[in-house]
Image (cartoon, rainbow, N blue to C red; front, side, top):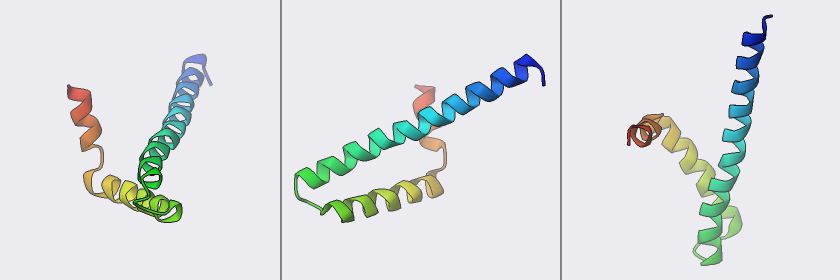
Amino acid sequence: MNSALILVIVIVFIAYVFDYTNGFHDAANSIATVVSTRVLSPQLAVLWAAFFNFVAFAILGTRVAKLLGAT
């Protein structure tokens, strides 16, 4: 393997790790809001977050990211 291919693989891996950890922060913020206001229990808030994150991805795909990237 040449060095350019290795560099691309490393950059893609770093991007995946960043995206994965960034999701922790987004989920924590949305869950903390509804739990701290006692709207939902912690267990129900986690279930709702997981469900709606999956549904949003399944229905909207990458359209939101494309819209935000265009602005």
